[in-house]
Image 1 (cartoon, each protein chain N blue to C red):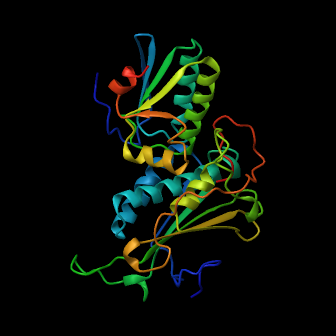
Image 2: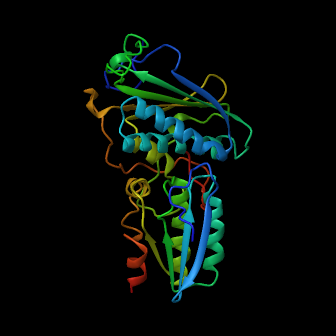
Image 3: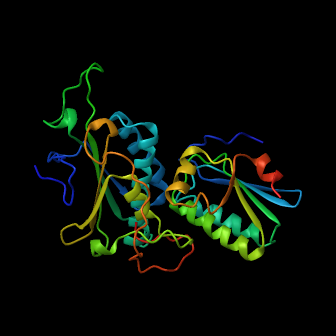
Length: 122
Length: 201
């Protein structure tokens, strides 16, 4: 798979997903701002219809996120809770982690350092 | 020269034309370009990459609010972004280029965002409580956390103006650091639809 880290914010957000050991892994790449968050929201809603046991959102390819991206993930978390899906965020870059801290959501979400740690979580 | 309203910053604002002024349309497609511009200017003014990124985030949030709430997502309405260098080498006007040998950094960066959208009472634009975990309504909180000062006002008879100031940490000005996130009051936004909608700001 091509390394999408560092994609320019001028390029549209891309969202890839796969299923692995019963978990759905979502890999957005690009900036998640007001322009890109509707794409992510639509993909997450589609993927959450099947009520997976675990939903891992790998943010390694996301250099920037604004409050519309955060809102999208909060909404996904609320749907996950209703569905008894464990939602895990992983591989947040510094700028992205910063907005979660400013919004005081860094302790609300389950956030782990990388995808391996997300797969290892019970 | 006039002092910034409601502030004890001891910063006397530059009354000259802004160093940067652009007009964009209210289309989210252009947000990334504005962020890059703001980050690059902030860096040239002596802000760290991290702080420049936070300033760009505050501008992004402010623009999103204009697009979403002011213009109801109509993509063809005007928004003006202006940037001033304040204090320091710029206190007496635009400094002559030093060729990289002198300190051309200002003490602070002032940014205004203006629109022609429907006016609202400035006191209605405030952050919501963060205790409630729900989508949206974080923009004003982010702006006020990241920037040292942020003031909304009506722009004549039409539109709103947001003025934001960020001081360089080593400028010697009081309050020149990122504040710890504050609680904020209830959201004054009438849009309670949830989803990915952010309330005013």
